[in-house]
Amino acid sequence: MTETGHRSGGGSGETPTVSTRRRYRRLLFGSVGVGVVANVALRLLSYPVAAEAAYWVGIVGFLAVWQFSPVTLFDERDAELERRASTVTLVVAAVVLVLGASGARTLGALGIYDAPPFVGGVLYGYVGLFVVFAVAYGWISGTR
Amino acid sequence: MNNDVRARREERGLSQGGLAEEVGVTRQTINSIERGRYDPSLELAFTLAAFFECRIEDLFDPDGDDAM
Image (cartoon, rainbow over all chains, first blue to last red; front, side):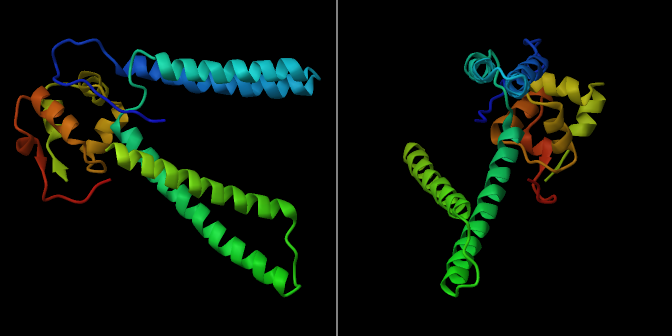
């Protein structure tokens, strides 16, 4: 999600971007937040259709701000933080997948414990995550 | 990587937020650079050097600690 950029040169009285970026970032995450909160509130009030509509208004708002913001929403440090957080997330997922899959198979084969179906679903979900990562990595490395 | 950003910024009477505005990054990025916790991209290093009207090697010392 993070795209970076900053102006070249400096001190020449160019239009400030940081406060604008802050404002649009608030709008970006605020639209999703409001959509989710409204969704939960409306579902609790038994308005399921209106709840989904509110949710999608939030999502569309997020996408609109992301796509049409006049400034770059994240700077290069944000991108670096996101890259590092993604790496940690993948490592955690890999550890859970490697240990969880093997553990579930072993315990099942020994008749000690049969993992409920949702555990298998979670593990296959992680497999899907790594497949998406591999495809994305291959695609991006082909364009750089 | 050690750098001279804080000294040069203070010399000009700029806050971190002010410098951030001038070079188009967040205040947190300037703070991290000054504390040696983040090494800027080559593009940002050039931008900072141009802003302070000096060379990159006058601003950054590669013999400092490793950063992010």
